[in-house]
Length: 426
Image (cartoon, rainbow, N blue to C red; front, side, top):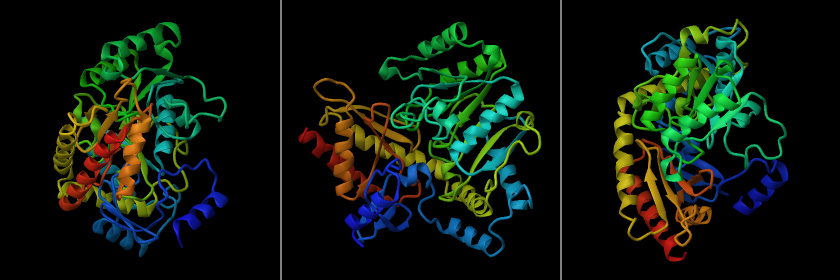
C-alpha cells in the first residue's frame, strides 16, 4: 500500500490533533535504521523522540521481552506483585543522583510521572504551588500542560489550566536571560505572586527538551538547590528526555554538584516499551498513603523486563562514553560549517543530546523556516530529523547511541549537504 493511500486513511480515521512530523509509515527497523512500507530506508535521528537510546530492537531488549512473554504479561503490580518490579526499583534507587535513601514508583508515561511527582511533592510538603520554567515541556495531561512553558500547540484551545502553577524565565544567555536574571525573577515571584512557604516544588529539565536543548547552567542549578533548601521546597528534575546516557552520564543531573529530591524518568528507560518512573527521597516518596499512587498498567512486566536489559546494555556497551564520543564528532562537523552557513546561531549540548539553532541571515531573528527547510531536505535524502524550540528554529539530534560508525558517518554527510543546500537556496 502506498504512502498517499495510507495518509488518506490516516486523515479519515485519526484526529488531526495527533500531529505527524513525517509521512513515513514504518514497516521494520533495526538500531538506527527504519524501512517504510514502500521499502525506502531512512537513518533515524529522532529515535522515537529520545526513546531509543539503545536503538530499535536491541537484541538483548527483545530477548528479555520474549522471555517475559513466556511467563506472564500482566497481573497489575498492586494486585499480584512481581520480583522484577522490585529489582528495577532497587537498581534505579542506586543509580539516581544523591547519597540519601531513595524509593521508586513505576507508571506508564512521562506525563504520568510528572503528575505523580507533583502529587508526591504536595503530599510531602502540605503545600500546593508549583513553579516551572518558560520553554519547559512536561507533558500533555492537564497538569503537564500547566507546567509546560509553551502555548502552541500544547495549550491552545484547551481552556483553563490547573491553578497554583507559576512560570519564570529559564536562563538562556543567547536569548538575553542570565542565571542572575532568572534567579531575580524567582525572587520577584516570591515577593509579588506566591509566598515561598506555599510552594511545594520547583520542576526543571536539566537540559530543556522541546524548549530547545538548552542546558541549565551549573551555577543556576546550585543556586536553585540552595533556594529550595532555604524555603523547604522540593526540587524535581524532569529527566524524561535527558536520562539513560543521552547526556554522556546516566542522568543529566550527574553533571551537577547537587541532587534533586524527586526525579521523573521515562522514554529510553525501557528501550521502546511504555514505562516511566518517579524516583526520590525515601521519606518524600512515602508521603502519600497506600493506594494514593499507582495505575493499572504501571510497571508492566514487559516494560520492566526491557528496562533491566536497557540498564545492562548501557553498562556493558559503555554508552555514556559512546554518547560523549558521538556528540563530539557531531558538534565538530557542525562547527566546520559556521563560515559557510551564516544562519548558524549556536551549536550546543552535552553528550549526544545536541542541537543546532538557526537565525535568519538578514534579520538575525530566529528562523523556523530555515530549520524546517533543512529538515525537509534531509528527509528527502533519507535522514529523519526533529525540530524544537519556542521559536521552532532548532534542530535536535537524538540518534540511538548504539548507531554504527559507518551509518553515523553517512548521516553526517547527509546533514552537512542538507544544511549547505538550504543555505545556498536561502
